Length: 323
Image (cartoon, rainbow, N blue to C red; front, side, top):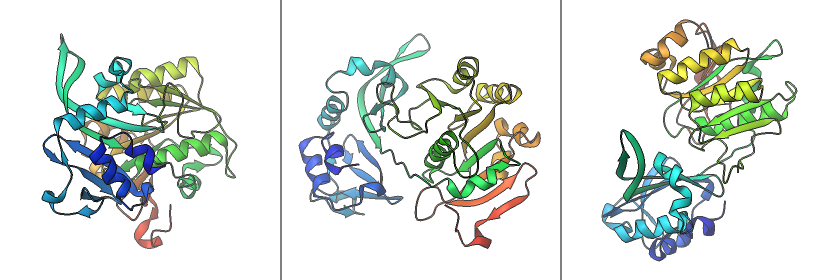
């Protein structure tokens, strides 16, 4: 990921600040623009204001001031001056750009009946940089494979702890094969283009040689489409969220497919308190729970449990050697 490639998405004064900055782009996770507010960079998991000189500051008054025209100009660069071409993505609140990076947008929604038709007067933008850390899932592979077969696996993670990064590499290794098992076919439903980071239908991230991707497709519908059309042995989705997702999971499991999924949370107890997840935990649908936590880099594993809640790995005992 080159600093110049990211900087060129922004107006001149922001671009100059980004080019003047001395930071590791692999540690930059978000660049946020809000109208009439200072520019914010999420770096190494912490929030900073970026000054015109390219320095990080904790002082709001020192940050680059973002104007309405800056957001408009950024949208022109992001969409290559063709907002119409990205109409469907804009309706969903984001645009995926080359490199697999995602630009989230917010403003005034335009409704057509009870359906969001578009977003106009865009006043807020969040560039989320896609990071691929190959090999970060290697330490968990022995835990999700039992007697030569893959286990239904749920990754539980607070925000910004690398759940998508870990899921992405897990998909890649299961698809291409590893020392633990030969590769198998994987179907990915990438509802928000975050797993594969597809640009014009082609994943910008390496998801393995036996992976098929449904990009910008609702998870529930996409899972069934993949099962009917692509015969995957594993189905992978990010961020379980509604009842339709839960019903689709049951169909995936009844079809004999294995499931990889993620959900926001900090522990199994946290997941049990979510009405949508209670039955899945109670009925022991998932055979492995991978719990992540905030550490020095994405994908750090805090604990691993089996379907009964028995601890298979604990970070406090192992000094965080996993991932």
